[in-house]
Amino acid sequence: VLVPSGASLEQLHWVIQEAFGWENAHLHEFRVSDRRYGVNLEDGWGEPALDERRATLKKVTRRGARFTYTYDFGDSWDHLVEVEDIVPFEPGGTYPRCLDGANACPPEDCGGAYGYHELLRAVADPAHPEHEDRLEWLGDDFDPGHFDLDDVNEVLTPFI
Image (cartoon, rainbow, N blue to C red):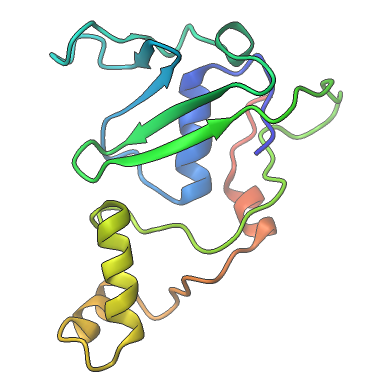
């Protein structure tokens, strides 16, 4: 996903939520180097998090930097975010913009990576005891191998 370097970590959070089709129904945090950023600054887990609304990508990262984004502490969706490149701002460009991707995003509240793999197993196996329940929960149109770049870009809300 291409985002401006002046984007805050809060804006990046929203980009990730929209790109994944998630609902921002859970807590999240960023870990950049040894610092935590979030919106729940006094969460009771060690040092208070720094305010993600004030931390821009250009202030806290650089080309080649890697950091984590964790969403839903119960399901523990841990994402490794890599700053692949820093490119000049294109006047008139649309930001954020998804450049590439693969597969459907896991649905909200499916149990994290382990739960998602179990969900896929149940859906793929008509003899699985949870097959019908899981298909009903997912809906008829869920295809785990589907990715549509245009669809993702349509839901990304431009912020510049």
